[in-house]
Amino acid sequence: MRCRSFPVKRGRSGLIWGVLLAGGSGSRFGAKKQFLQLVGAPVWQRALQALIDGGVGGVILVVPKGDEADVRAQAHAVSPHVVKVVTGGDSRSHSVQCGLAALVDRTPDPADLVTIHDAARPFVHPNDVRRVVAAASEAGGAILGQACADTVKRIEGTYIAGTVPRDQLALAQTPQVFRWSWLERHYLHAPSAQLAAATDDASLLEAAGLAVAWVAAAYPNPKITVPGDWDYARWLAAQRWGDVREDRVWV
Image (cartoon, rainbow, N blue to C red; front, side):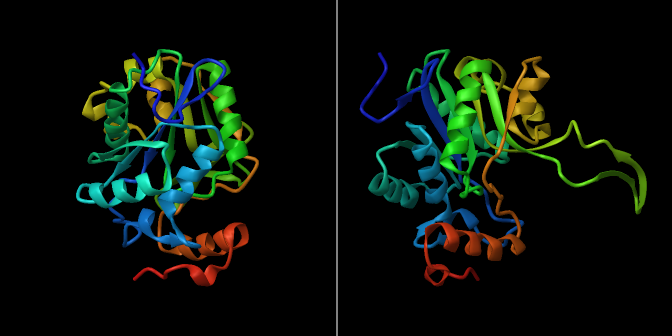
């Protein structure tokens, strides 16, 4: 029997779950960026709220080893939507697998949708979340992305080897949303080598021969990856949520 003690919402084809990835070690950034403040709230909480406002409920929050207790206390204080906090894996895909394994305990139906999102994208707009969920309800799987506006070059060493036509290219973002039946079959038990080779979630489903739709982002959805991204993130947070002077500068 499915537990309904938390606010999981229903889409066209089933319930809408979430796996929010906040398990990074911060090796490229120099700090665990998911815990830094953006106008009075940590990065991961901004991403969580965007999912909730976009219609996602019953979120599994994936965090680094050692941070579980602190994040669990914070999460339960700010939102009833976080149903479990779990430890991430050695890579992003392994962390997704950890989140999916925790979701098994909630006995999702095959038609339920699972929204996978990186906490490092705290600016995703709720309207874009809704649009990706709606597309996944129809197609079985969908991702948020951005059409490639720049000219793309294929390179070999320090020289250009050719120009790649951009009219059929898109840059993948998150959230990425899929039916539970797809994830259970092709992601939950995927071998480590296959997980290590995956650069996003859709690629695992594509490799299984499934057709994944894409939705063009209508709003900015930048990812915080390296220190140079932080100034822009603070500026954008100030425009959206308040005064940048409230932010804590990372050291």
